[in-house]
Length: 462
Image (cartoon, rainbow, N blue to C red; front, side, top):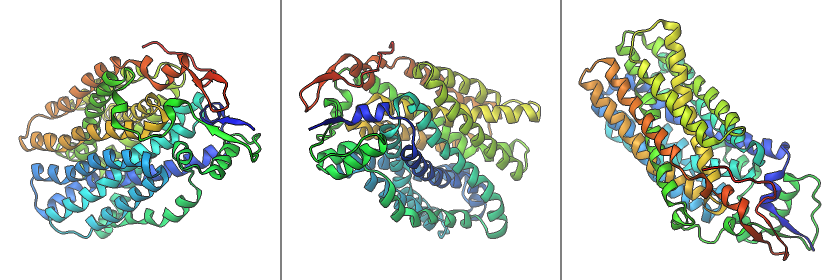
């Protein structure tokens, strides 16, 4: 009889086709998610013109989706630890696909806002689940890179929205870019068939055949045998995944710091996503040029996410994030000043790298901070609480735009949260993370022997 430590198996696995499959599905889902999120900002000037709404009311319309994302991240992130992550992901895809398409059929602000709120439930709910899924199945030595590579699909979705948006809106009107968002629902059967389920959920349900299949795909050298049993470190076992566990074992202070960082970073992300086109248009650029800035912003986000993940796997992820937030404060502030066009494009790219890209690396950090059994819950609550910053951003910046303040003041208002986020991340107690504790705490498995949580980990300094 053999006892297989699945956590250790996943940690020490070499990248193979199975990891590539998980990465493919998670990245594709994030691309769709990024498209659905960016499409409102891309179409905002056209929607405002057709529906005759003021900048402040337009901010509320955009925030309706973000309000839904807050509830979606908390509820669908937490419930995934109970109903299974694969099922929760499919529910999210159905929500954001169908209701974003439905928003394209509306003709007045209230019904548009309701549809976007319902779509937001799925947009917000899918993020913590795919981050938890990718974190769970990635080899430890490339975990940050895998998560950020997957999440770079978010920027690809934003670029896709900008590219399609220009052509579709010119030919068919703003509603066409929303209707196109309904297509991902067609992929649900394939996702249910080929995406693996969460390991703690399978162990809780005692689905041995699936666990054996996953073990053999993580490690092709493993050959299933009738007497095999599977174990996880004590802190990774799925019991009831209570929210209270986010505040136990010395993690409470760091949990609050993560929430502050998420709030501030999401404020910056959605301020830029929602109002960059409008701000650049008001600065004298044509709509076509303003949409180009959205492309550059998302291209920068992709570079920032992948580059940040690469750095985080080689240096301390906490200090990589502090540096990225500092870059955000500088680059966003400089966007408010008249500079040569080439430098302006560089600043927009750096802003994308250090806001959207930084948010993606922050997701990777919080995914590694919590034990496997409450990972989706931890990510969901950080994302959900942070969504209040995302909700406020379009409204606050919309109000500033309505006041016709100088361009510099608008961008300074977007930059200040970067400083606060840098301080919050610097205060996180890394030694209380799941990896930091597991390195020091021996864990007894069901086979009777005692071993470290992974056998290779070293505690990183706080």
